[in-house]
Image 1: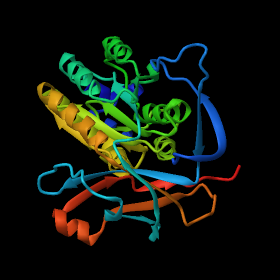
Image 2: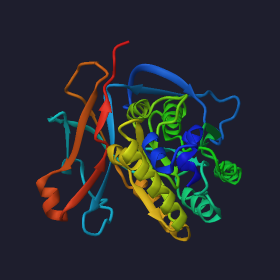
Image 3: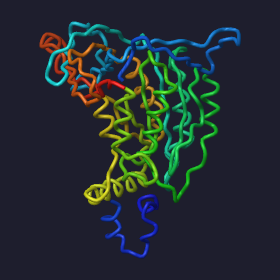
Length: 349
């Protein structure tokens, strides 16, 4: 509960009620652009050249997870012809289609602010077991955040380095805030500069707080969302549920709803919804299964790509709708598609 008021400590002489009012990618294949990229744990010798990747900003890639509506089971046998892509209401032609072939770039974003520690021994064990299920070509980076953001482990394919980083997670800072705007902006920026340009990108937040006001002295929540869209990342969340966590998060949700008219708010669940991700809330002792489910869902997502029929390079946000054909729905029952709802168009420099 202390974290709820940490951003308003200078108003501590005011009543708690008044405080509530004051708290107030796009890419996978880019034209004639190359860059060097070094990944730790890829077993490349010093004499070997750095990995050179070519990508094309005109190719829009979208990850889509398809679930049965009633059972929430993954539907993993669909074909390219089963999907429909609409951009701003205009049908697009799918040029690339795959499933579980492109490597994953995963940023673990671990909350260290407030009274509640969402990364206890059970969650650490669950994370290690789940990440061990990734492919050898997948890479993981570890970041922690509270008032500020720290890169604890750069992208690596070396599972021992990941395990070591998870053992070095710093203690929680009781009076620190949960600066979601700073955390997601830094995670998205790092994903663009260091993540695999030809892979699929995922940011997994492990936190007890899913919603908060923007912290000062940093990029806004609006800028963070823009950065997430530009990075092409899917946002997911893991929330270890305890009675105290539920109370603190409920207070944060209530406070941000009341004070949202005065200060900007960032919501992880909303980010997940808009990028096609998922937020799992479960007791810590059951997160082992939940974390594995999340990794399974990431591995079984479909990857679709298209070149937009809108050739303007105006840097605007374009709306996406990923759907299934009537025949696919008819033969599989009612299905739900989780995919990002928009992307930032390339812009002329």
